[in-house]
Amino acid sequence: MIAFLANFTIALLFLLSCTYFTSTDAYDALDPHGNITIKWDIMSWTPDGDVVREIIWSMNGGQATEQGDCSGFKNSFPHCCKRNPTIVDLLPGTPYNQQIANCCKGGVLNSWLQDPAHAAGSFQLSVGRAGTSNKTVRVPKNFTLQAPGPGYTCGRVKIVKPSKFFTSDKRRVTQALMAWNVTCTYSQFLAKKSPTCCVSLSSFYNDTIVPCPTCSCGCQSNMEKPGSCVEANSPHLASVVPGSGNNSSLPLVQCTSHMCPVRVHWHIKLNYKEYWRVKITVTNFNHGMNYSDWNLVFQLPNLNNMAQIFSFNYKPLNPYGAINDTAMLWGIRYYNDLLMQAGPLGNVQSEILLRKDASFTFEKGWAFPRRVYFNGDKCEAYLWLPNASSRNYISLLMLNGFDHSF
Ligand SMILES: *[C@@H]1O[C@H](CO)[C@@H](O)[C@H](O)[C@H]1NC(C)=O
Ligand SMILES: *[C@@H]1O[C@H](CO)[C@@H](O)[C@H](O)[C@H]1NC(C)=O
Ligand SMILES: *[C@@H]1O[C@H](CO)[C@@H](O)[C@H](O)[C@H]1NC(C)=O
Ligand SMILES: *[C@@H]1O[C@H](CO)[C@@H](O)[C@H](O)[C@H]1NC(C)=O
Ligand SMILES: *[C@@H]1O[C@H](CO)[C@@H](O)[C@H](O)[C@H]1NC(C)=O
Ligand SMILES: *[C@@H]1O[C@H](CO)[C@@H](O)[C@H](O)[C@H]1NC(C)=O
Ligand SMILES: *[C@@H]1O[C@H](CO)[C@@H](O)[C@H](O)[C@H]1NC(C)=O
Ligand SMILES: *[C@@H]1O[C@H](CO)[C@@H](O)[C@H](O)[C@H]1NC(C)=O
Ligand SMILES: *[C@@H]1O[C@H](CO)[C@@H](O)[C@H](O)[C@H]1NC(C)=O
Ligand SMILES: *[C@@H]1O[C@H](CO)[C@@H](O)[C@H](O)[C@H]1NC(C)=O
Image (tube, rainbow, N blue to C red):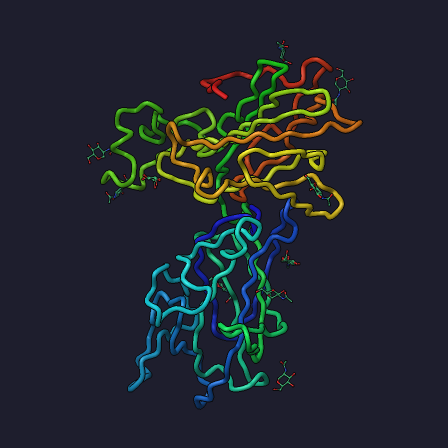
């Protein structure tokens, strides 16, 4: 997954103590710098006696999930006394006296590229017995970011330049006393997520459709385990959809040969003299999920010849500077930024127009994307397009129950 491209539900865990800490790195070739940074600014020192162990006196914009054992405090009521508190974001609409600026997003962060205003969240905590100056301060250790499951690995705490804050009238700047950064990177492998998306291909020059690889996201096992997926036209569908009073742990993915909740279809639609045109269709096969603020990243040789995009937002990503072969697509607000649950409305579509340069060819799969990501997770696809003659570009594959309606 591409850390800066996804939506998250976040819980933050850290150990309020000095402990030895190791980290491993996650890496994604399409997003070598994708990460989430936790910045920890100390706003004031509050002397409060001897240093025994840290406690959290109070919090704004977030809360510790458990108070822990605060029995040592007779006349005061700390928010949390655990050595390794778990902090979760508050929900939008939290009472004003519990808010701080940029808080309370219900744990959902948007990707920086799509919506920078919603790409960061803040909370404030008042930590007692944690030191009284930048010489004696005890740095928190062992950060864990959950989004909501595993997948993130957080590195060491680094001392960085303190943030500056503007007063609301923007006429005065205050500065934090000290700051630390922790960078957390994502790995789909660590998240132990099975693939959630697959890619299918077709073209105007050949009727053959390359479907999603069979069992991309799991195999259909309704034979052994009835109810592991739902038939498209199941009369029971209405009764299994959340909100209709049914058990939400029931699988709600439509029965397909690939079993992916999301399919991205790439169709080479037209060949003009100087341009060529692609139609992209993203289909939701999950009856239990609306994907709001979805995004799609793809890598295509010669993407810098992009001429026009219809009905999606588009931004080139240039992870390696000069090599301009990666871009992100996402929906237009209030038009197609919501990929609705499976059903007649469960798809979004766009077309892109690309200019042909001197080296352009439809051969050897050059007009198909090398990699596709949906909401930051890699989509399963045939890695190699079969060897093709100059006429036949894609191979014939079994079309098991494949939907031809593009
Ligand atoms: C860090 O936190 C994780 C999760 O709470 C825990 O499993 C791990 O043992 C901790 N590591 C250290 C060195 O305390
Ligand atoms: C985290 O992302 C930022 C912004 O893309 C990048 O400058 C920084 O090098 C990244 N850090 C790590 C440890 O990957
Ligand atoms: C620390 O994190 C902030 C974002 O919270 C970022 O702007 C800054 O560049 C980071 N500094 C370092 C040295 O990574
Ligand atoms: C600690 O604070 C003093 C003055 O308050 C400052 O000169 C020094 O640079 C600070 N050290 C760090 C590591 O922030
Ligand atoms: C869902 O609940 C309805 C009653 O609310 C029930 O009739 C139906 O069998 C349930 N469906 C499943 C798949 O359990
Ligand atoms: C939902 O179904 C699972 C497995 O069928 C069962 O363990 C669980 O108790 C059910 N929950 C509710 C709220 O019915
Ligand atoms: C998806 O969104 C539609 C429209 O807002 C809503 O009617 C439906 O219940 C939602 N489905 C799920 C699974 O949240
Ligand atoms: C990359 O291509 C896009 C068009 O797809 C263009 O707008 C952008 O300027 C290019 N960037 C670089 C660094 O070549
Ligand atoms: C495609 O097949 C031809 C002959 O069958 C072979 O000469 C050529 O090297 C193959 N190309 C690739 C890319 O495998
Ligand atoms: C499409 O491609 C397949 C496999 O390369 C080939 O067998 C078939 O004849 C082609 N169909 C047409 C109409 O060219």
